[in-house]
Length: 318
Ligand code: AN0
Ligand code: CP
Image (cartoon, rainbow, N blue to C red; front, side, top):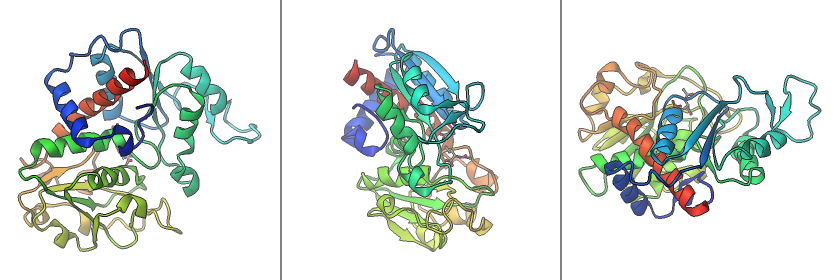
């Protein structure tokens, strides 16, 4: 593996999950693999889980870690080529990338969709510049269209908790006051479609995801119907993908909040969310605090997914 940006990069999913379980049992088995190797984690956006779990994963592998919040302390970066830089941006990504790359061996990048241009977002123009110009292995810590470390952790969690071989997994849209990217649901769909689970997506009209991510999933506009006999409910808000509403909140209808009544329609389903979550918008206090809520072990598995990915990047490139 040279870079890690989507499900295809990880190869065989069964092998990847098996490797994750091995790492979970013995996290320090490869603590010499990263000796004298440095990970640079670069954040264009906020983070709690990704920041801590990825740093911990790299430390378990014996790496040194540097973390840079680009928008807090570094120079503001221009990302488009050809711009006359007479505004507030002091440095161009085309110099910053090779400079940063000269100080490290692996680079993790968080660069959310900017909602200024759908084409720029869906072409991953920031992440691709890192892959093109750094000369180093690069992994996504949530880019414009995907959040693969999250989806991998979600898969590990489902494999740990599932009671049947082919569980019914439901991705449900839920309300949120601000526009959020489609990266988490896109990515979750991409990883679920790579399994043989019974995978259903439910959302209000207007919140259709890009067809390349929906893939073979069943789309059900009636949330209650989608919940029937579900084994896992995966809640997430996202903004509209389709034009002319790209990146917009069409409505934040609280009729779509995940509550106990809806959970009662399921097969005693587990509740999942990538976090951070807004209580009583996305999910009620009662559901997130219920014994069926597995959001904390799900977040804990972020350390495991990151460790599998960084381990493979070290093994395959150094
Ligand atoms: C981000 C998102 O929805 O993509 C990060 C989730 C991991 N969420 C927020 O910005 C609240
Ligand atoms: N789930 C997740 O990626 O959380 P953070 O945004 O806090 O890193």
